[in-house]
Image (tube, rainbow, N blue to C red; front, side, top):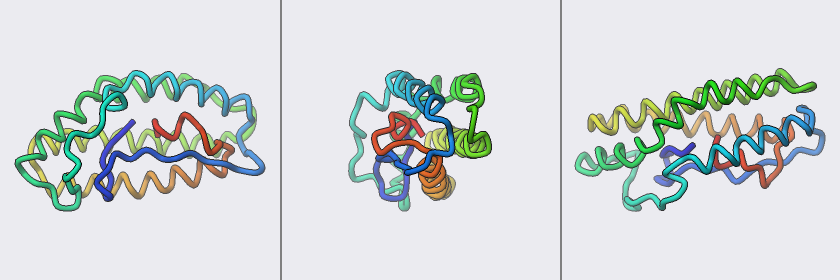
Length: 160
């Protein structure tokens, strides 16, 4: 999924690596395959962000609804994500780590959905608040995923 964070760009984590994965490697591979397939379904992944001067910390009210319309292209997939993510099941090992990762990913997804709504309504303060929330969760998600065994080239880096 993509959404805007405080650096003004589309937030796409670079990937993660851990020396001793907490989640069993077979499940990590399953999640990576899921992420690769999901990323192909997102319209924003196929296009460069069209407003490079847009600053999420100080959103321009004329551009904000356009940003919302751009991000809204992902809403159909965002609405399907919770069911699809839960359908992955549970790993043989590292269930607590997976629950944390899944919870953070779903929180980020919900905030990203809210971000679209406030952008379309030109609610600048609320939009900036979502950008702050997404940045915080993205950092937590990155750290949790790295500790759980996702590699530096994980396809989930572009989804979560």
